[in-house]
Length: 147
Image (cartoon, rainbow, N blue to C red; front, side, top):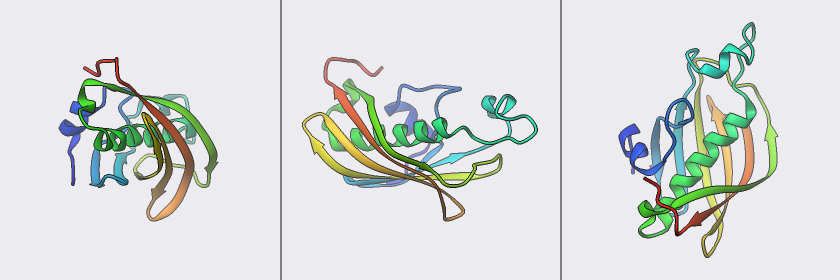
């Protein structure tokens, strides 16, 4: 099920300059594929690095985490009235730099769910080449309003 930016904004509390997803390309209860268009207008390129702009790895991981948050929303009924929090990250590897003009494709797969805790595998691609990967953990806070 494809979702545009307006659908993403209904689910995630993130806003500019920290919203790092542009579109959900595919989704199911176990998998999600998202898109981030990387442009030279990104505020982080002013300092990372002006002569050699490269998307910071931590922001690639954050984009994965945001996609994972949407995957959790698809998995838990009535999650719109709750918040999803990033809990941990393991097995992070960065393979290639991400530069302005790239389209970052984020692929998340649910590995395990135990109650409100989710463990997911994340991979980031540019032009079908793996640029980063990680295992992510997130939790649902049932008492926190997401709006």
